[in-house]
Every structure is written in C-alpha cells, then in structure tokens.
Image (tube, rainbow, N blue to C red):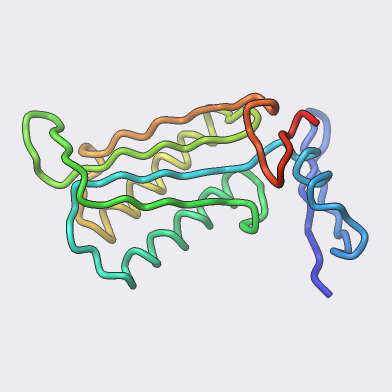
Length: 153
C-alpha cells in the first residue's frame, strides 16, 4: 500500500505528514496543495535519442517536484523537438520552456528551477544557459482542470 508524504507550508510553520493512499482522495489532496506543475520544453535540437529524452523528462520532473514541493506523481513534462527557433540572431541550439503551476511560485523557487533546468539542458543537449528562455506562469484554480473537474470545484 502506497503512502503520500505531504509537505504543509504556512507562513508560520513547515511540516510533513504521512497519509495512507487508501485514506486519501487524490483530488482533495491536489486541491489542498493547489499545485500541478507542468513543464513544456521546446527546442530546435533534432534527433534526440529516446533514452536522452527520457532522462530529460525524469530529471525535469524531479526538479519541479523538489523545488515546488509537489509529489512527482502530479508533475507533467512534455518535450517537443525540432522546432524552428531563431534566437539571439541565430538558429544555434536553443530552448524555450513554459513552467506552469496552480498557485504561486516564489522568486526563490523560480530562481532555483531556472538554474537547475538550464544546467540540465546544458548537460543533456549542449544548449548553453544563455540560449534558453524559461517562462513561469501561475494559474488560478478555476483555470486548471483534471479528472473532469477544475481545482476550484
């Protein structure tokens, strides 16, 4: 039987509690935590081997989960390759990433994610950090749907 380790963050305290999967409604858990991270990565890099693509997805998922404080179970990563990207006067390898989240992302969290994702793209795809744009978006709960509902319901 699986367990969730829930991170509770309020301005005055931080705590963890373990909840048995059989005793939790996942939808309620998601609504409580108000965060559903999504990374949509677009690059002009072609012919990325399937194994490398999988490594990028796994590592990116872990980065978002760790930095945002969400179980990796609720993180989605989309990698799109072979886009026509003209950036900084050239078509050299580059990337654009959208990081979306239900709820707020602090400046400290976005800085850490930016640093870690840029280094990942440099290590896995040889895309220098100065050839990556990362856009962070905070969504309201009624603008994010899952399982036939929105997180406002």
